Structure formats: structure tokens, C-alpha cells
Length: 154
Image 1 (cartoon, rainbow, N blue to C red):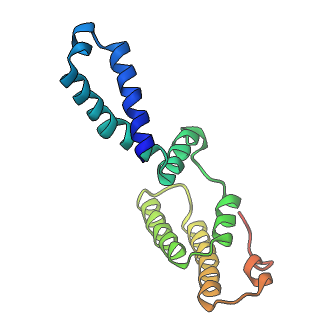
Image 2 (cartoon, rainbow, N blue to C red):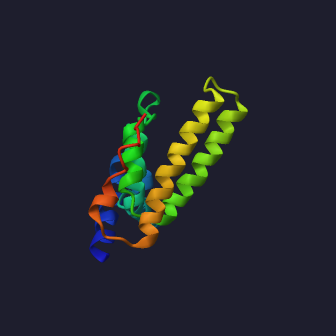
């Protein structure tokens, strides 16, 4: 920590020397105050933020998510549900799906009511199977990765 702070002080000193005027840089109290502020209020918080794993993940997602590739295909979504091992997250996804289905119904989209009910039933079936499997604590690898022959990705 002390070496990092010393390095930031040196960096601040160099920045003030390069970008500051001769008169301002010659004022010792101003220079020391500016170095302290830059070090403790700019550089250290910036490095802490940049090194935070959540910030890194969010930045990567933000960089990769352009309007043309935000949509996730059915197969990837189903695979993500099947491979999830967090029971709480699956329950939240189930609630979010029900909300989204209700929103789409309210908008009266082009999906017929029978097709919408079929999609809802299949997603509920998949989520219920996965939630039951995780809740039971079963270690059967066959049941973990198989959805049965009646399930269709479409």
C-alpha cells in the first residue's frame, strides 16, 4: 500500500510538472496539496475500481453487447438453464419469465395463444425439472444433463 501510494505521488508530481505552469508548480503548498488530492481521490479509487472483478465483468458485457448481438438464441438459453446449479437464480429466472410472458401477452404480439401457452408450458417444465433436481440434491449425472426425448429446443 505504501509503495503504491508513493508511486502515485511520483506520478502526480510528474503530471503537475508537465501540465502545470511554472508559477503554479513552484508553489510548494499547492503542489503538495494537488499531489495528495490526485493520489487519494483520483488514482487510488480508480485503480480499486478497475481491479474490481464485478466492474471487469460489467465492462466486458457492455463492450460485447451491441444492439445486434444482445438477443440470446433458444439453445444457449436452454443450455444456461440446464447447467445452472444455483436454485435461487433459477427461481428468479422463473419469475422473470412469467413477467415477460405477461408483458408480451399484454402487447398482443403475433404469437397465437396456443403457441404462447406451449412455450410457457415447456419453459415451466424445464425450470421445474431443474429446480426439483437441485432441491433433491441428487448426484445422478444422467438426470442432470438429460431433458428427456420429448423436449424440443424450439
